[in-house]
Each structure stands twice: as C-alpha cells, then as structure tokens.
Image (tube, protein in one colour):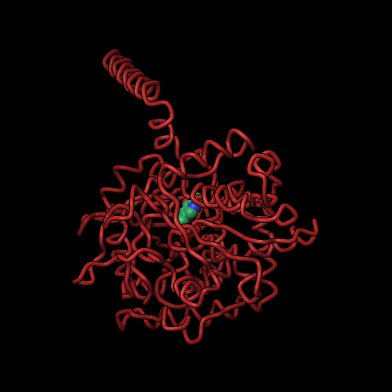
Amino acid sequence: MSYSENGFFDNFGGKYVAEVLRRPLDELEVEFKKAMKDPAFINELETIQRDYIGRETPLLFAETATKLLGGAQIYIKLEGLANTGAHKINNAIGQCLLAKKMGKTRIIAETGAGQHGVATAAACAKLGLDCTVYMGEVDVRRQQPNVAAMEMYGAKVHPVTSGSRTLKDAVNEAMRDWAANPDSTHYVLGSALGPSPFPDMVREFQSIIGKEVKKQAAERKLDIAAMVACVGGGSNSIGFFAPFIDQKSPRLIGVEAGGIGPGVGENAIRMTGNVSREGILHGYKSRFLLDDDGQALPTRSISAGLDYCGIGPQLAALGKEGRIEFTSATDKEALDAVKFFARNEGVLFAMESAHAGAAAIKLAPTLPKDKALIVNMSGRGDKDIFITCPVFRPAEWKQFLISELERLNEQKDIHEAEIMNK
Ligand SMILES: *Cc1c(COP(=O)(O)O)cnc(C)c1O
C-alpha cells in the first residue's frame, strides 16, 4: 500500500542521517518488512489492538450535525476512544512490539506536547519495556499533566536543555542516544516522518484507522465523497487515507493549523501559503517552515500537536501530485468546531482533531446529501481543558485554579503540621 521507493516518495523522504544511524535504520527496515509478513507478529498485534487499544473504534453517524449543515452525511471516526485517548497508541504499540521481537529491551522517544510520550510510555508499560522520553525543558514545564502521566506509566522523562529546549532539541537528543545505543535500544518516532523507514512504518501501523473505515463504510453502503483529517507530522491523516490513496476517489483533505493568521510565525502551514519551502531536517526531505539559513522558523497553533515545522514526506508528495488537497483552519475555527460537535453530537474533539472538524463544517454544505463525508477525530478533548477552559470560561477557570492552589497550600500546611507533631 503506497510504500516508498528506496525511502523516497517522489523526491521527498530519504535517510539523511549521520553514518552511525545507517545500520540501525537498515536493520529496522529489514525487521519491519519481515514482521509485516509474519502471521505470528500480525496475530499478536491484532490481539493487542483489540484487547488493549480497544479496536475497532466506532464510525459514528453525526445525525444532528448533518441536519444542521444540510449537505453530505457526516460520519466521525472516533479514534479518541482508543486507549490513552488518541491515535498515537496505534504507532507506539506497533513499534514497541516490533522492538521486542528484535530483542530490544529499551525504548526511547521524543515528545513535544507530551501526547506521543504518553502513548509510548503506556505501550512500554503494557509490553514490559524500559522507557526514556526526551522532552524539551520548556515543554516539561508547560505540559506537567502529560509528564505526570508518563511517570505513572513508569517512563523516565529526560528534560532536554540544549537549543530552544523544545521538540526539535528533543528529537536531536533522542537521535544521539540511539546512535550511542543501537543494540539495546529502539527509537519510537512519533509521526509519519523522519528518516526512512519511519514514514512507511508509522503509516502502516496507523493504517488500521483507514482499513476499519473502509470496512465500516462498505457495511453501511456509504458513498464517500470526501475524507478529512488534521495534519501535524501527518500520522493520523496518512493512516486514515492509506487504503484510499491508490483510488481516484474519495477526495482526501488534510487540514493544517492556521493559527492566528497567515504571517510568519503565526501558524504551522506547510502545504499552502508562501512561507514554507523544500528542505532537509531531522533526517528527511520534505516541506518545512525554515528561514534562509535552513533553521526551523517559529510556529503557532492552539493545538500543541499541530505545531511542528515539517510534514511527513509522503503527504508532501501526495499534495504535490494533487491526490491529497490541503487547507487550514484557524485557532478560532477549531474552537468553534469543538463547541459545535460537543453540543450537537456529544463528542468532545481534541483541539488538533477540531481542525478537521472545522474543515468538515465548511465542506459538508457543498456536497450532495446522498454522499458521505468522513472526519477523523484523531483524539478526544479531555486533555485540552487547560486550553479550552480559559477560553470558554475564563473567570470561572481562573477562580478554580486559585482555589486549587489554596487547597494545595493548606494541605501542605496540614502535612507539615503532621510531620512537626511526630
Ligand atoms: C499528535 C496529535 C496529532 C498530530 O499528529 P499527526 O502525526 O499529524 O497525526 C493530531 N491529533 C492528536 C489528537 C494528536 O495527539
């Protein structure tokens, strides 16, 4: 299903890494391709997908939304119902299972907002693997709930203090670790990007989303006009689209983070607009937001998962050839979409997924009523209360945080008093 040719999709992709990483990458490619043809591996993967991740995830007919928008029938693929709350677990489980088959005992991962770190930490806990997650020091401070979750799953979170102390520095640090420990360690990359074979591997582990959609749509005899997914690095979208790419239809639409506007540093738009360019970063060639020196430009989005400066090479190629269309949704449109689907469907979209929801709200009325429009809800919005509550209920949320702080301070007083009395 749409594998790369020697690691390339058109002229995107490749394996632009230091010499020391070539052997582990080559070994990984061989073992991955072997595993995908090994009935025992596939059987074990399917069992974990069913019993641990909770697959298959439902395809929900959004009846009220469909009536209100007055066009195509809207269906929502509820990836947010996967264990840990998003699609990232599909990839984390797949790679960790492969690593275990390869005899690795130690897993490392990079994380920005923390979602991939949480998924990897959970997968390692399930499969009995040692886990270290590299995370920029700035992100560690901003994303405490996810840091706490990773530690609860038994992972070690390693704060990265180099550079801007964010995601790209965490990637560099993880690559350095892998280069130093290739025999014991597997690096679980979090999206459908990075040096080959990661884009192929991540797509295959995420393609379970699209395979289920294809089967679910056939069972209900849906005539799919379009499929919409949000695009950060590109793993949920490429997995959702994968079984449909080699067909002429349906339309496949990727939605990038429009942030607060079209200016440099105001969004994370790599496929439309005039800021992004072709370049090489983090081991692969693709479209990036880079400055004239080839350094990553700042990005901005209300959703922490959509603000990476690059896009997976296969998406870049499919965008160039026109098979996948790209659009964007702003922070405001995404927030409106969260409200719309919560109120009308009882489904709370993650901020990332709400970008796809926002595009679907615009697209549905333009499509015929006898056709289906399928939106991938890549994750659920419970994790986003620290973003959505300050917007939707600013005064109440602030009061809540103040009283929580007071409560903690009082508890501390009580605790200290207890210690003193002993
Ligand atoms: C990380 C994340 C994304 C963006 O990553 P992709 O690799 O583009 O899928 C989207 N949605 C959710 C819920 C995420 O956690």
